[in-house]
Image 1 (cartoon, rainbow, N blue to C red):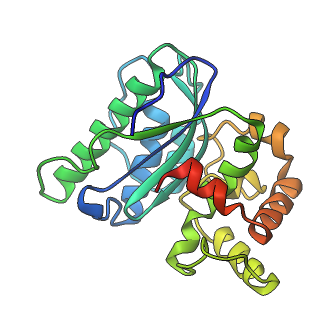
Image 2: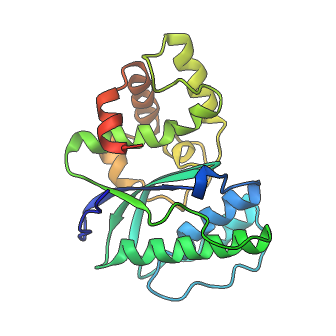
Image 3: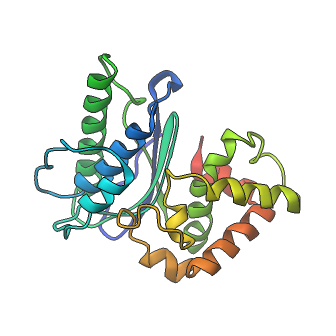
Length: 231
């Protein structure tokens, strides 16, 4: 897949998976380390030393300082056992490329050291798709946030859900920590990582965002999923 030319103030779907589809997150600390990287590497200055305890509470304390010189706005994120999805807006020229280089290298070095392995962790260069229409900004956040459904409802993409299935899906998503979904629906999880202002204007505040997720699950656009994810 040919990458788009990244430009400032444009928004992109960024994703990648583990080499040979291997799991890239094996423990809660691994998810937290990647999420911390989303914050710490989002600067044109060198990253700070990550030598402190990896738990949600300590990370939230750590993320309270004012972040300057950001390379990108992270609008949406979701981590799965063997892949990740990001919805990113570029702020500086070359910002996405630099941010993803630092994020990928930093997490791979952490993972290889922790699990005594060598070599690439992800499948080559990250994949990127440009978001150009308003519909993309409505559909893609829901698609990204709903990825965890494949862990318990592996056929969720294949057919329209019944009302009981929608309720089950919403309950599953409300229990998944490794995405920006909880913060968008008003349940404080890792609120300082994602810049939620843009999508709040597009989709709505927490009650509207939850309602929009429910409606999206009831009437998913399979054509959209195929066209904008290429997975």
